[in-house]
Length: 146
Image 1 (spheres, one colour):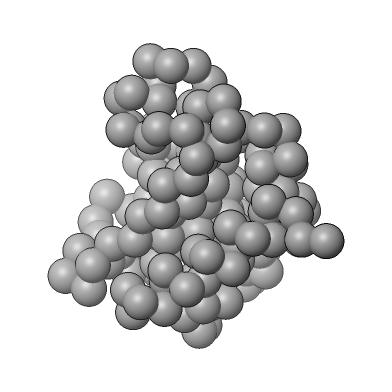
Image 2: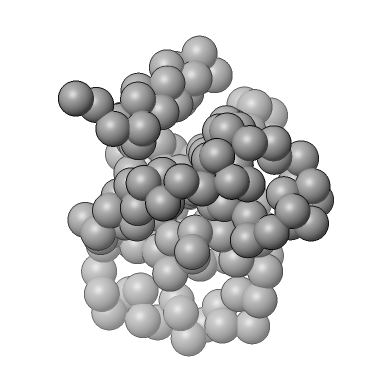
């Protein structure tokens, strides 16, 4: 028996393909990215395996019936779509991002896609965290996984 997450994951993959993204999805959190202040974002690879478990838990908690869930494609790297999932905590947050009950899917068009640059070296990642620390205040707005 498929779970709600499995069903919506399949729907999201189809949505991504229709919008020019790879169907294979890696779920990211705010800790997996670094903003640069430009239209480029650094992404730490490999993506932690437990990120998908966090998204699955969001679905299993009934968030889609209570306040809705947003599935958002951030960009693509190495032939995979990097995406986040988010659910409002209350009716005001839900209204602010126009999420009704259920699931809302979002993907940037080709003109507005953000460039993602993969970083697989832990040493390089630590350096970038230090170098770009002042630019990270807003990253929770881009990738609001809880």
